[in-house]
Image 1: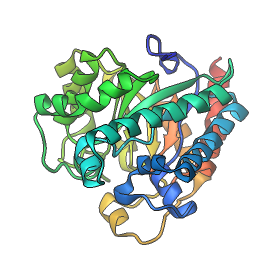
Image 2: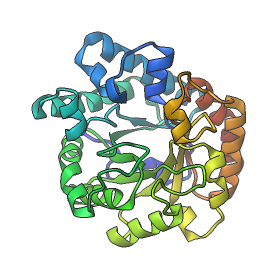
Image 3: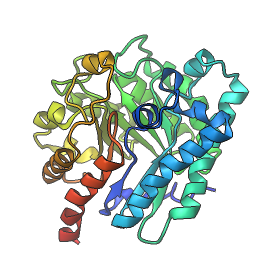
Length: 318
């Protein structure tokens, strides 16, 4: 049974964290094999499930230490039909993996949640294609039908919401929002941008958010930015009503471009302390920014520094 589907607590003023870069952490720090960056593939073995439980537990412990809320994002970014087929999953086994991913977070919440640390279970939806390139673009209607199946699984599981990460063109984001609306699921959309602050297809972040809101009558609960460094997008957050729709950021640790990251043979973990300070600077610009986590290259160190640098800003308000 979902706990927060009818009233997401992060829509208030409380400080919320997320996890860091799950795939880069598991590959580079834990030495695990994730074919095609598919963390959900670990669910097929007891050892893999234990690794995921350990991973999420570390962030639940950080959440409790700072008395912050936590958005638990499922390991299902690659668990859609095309990627599942490529990885050898049948429709039935893929559906089961999506359900298992939510159940694991349900167990984490039951173990760690307290009154002061609400933990929201989010079913993660990834792009049909590459996360960095808007290849094989679909129409909004095609995207709605494509993503409906995975979102329907989350709707039938104890997920509180759906979050689409690394959206790189508007039509797919619109389709996901409409699919979630059909199933009465709260949805959050997170765009990725290049070093110029624009989406990979050249569209501005402002235009993307405004176009999705127009096409869906403002159905998304809020928007996020992920898989880019703050220096890539801070310059485009110049104020205006559209920036009030941004509640969350999951930045990369590295300042490198997506193309450079693709070619890198070693993990660039950046500077966790600096990243925390950069988030605090963004908090002073974005009025509704209260969901803070990481993406590629980030781990527990980065989330701890983000919490340390930003919790005082929320305490000062409250």
